[in-house]
Amino acid sequence: MLSKVHHVGIVVKSADEALNFYRDALGLPVTADRVIEDQGVRGVLLQIGESEIELLEPVREGTGVARFLETRGEGMHHVCFESDDVDKELDAARAKGIQLIDEKPRLGLAGMICFLHPKSNHGVLVEFATPLAEGHH
Ligand code: CO
Image (cartoon, rainbow, N blue to C red):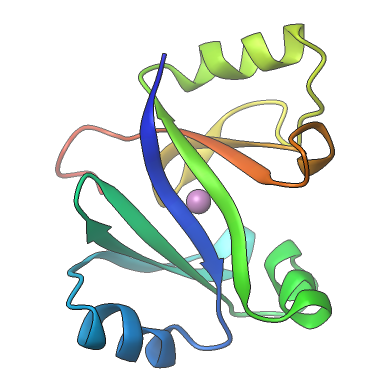
């Protein structure tokens, strides 16, 4: 079951510069900050209430996030809904004919994640995530 907005993903040129706003000006605490090699991004999560902001900075060319930054500039990239069972959400979306990006959930910054294609979601890239147990952030 989908339970809440887990995070909003925002593509930035520089996570360090973006932290001047999200961490320093808004006062949001950073809960994770690491490079996800297979996606070619540095991801930074900041807590806001029960949800998070996910900053995505491309660290190499040729990735989806790098192309997004080149063509559309900085800005909102995706919204992520939390589920207790990401496999089940993905199967249900597939059964309803929703166009998928990921055929199987994979490990991401927010836990086990998958993406649905924006063409099926009224122009919004949608992510499902099931966070890992505490301590594996
Ligand atoms: Co995300």
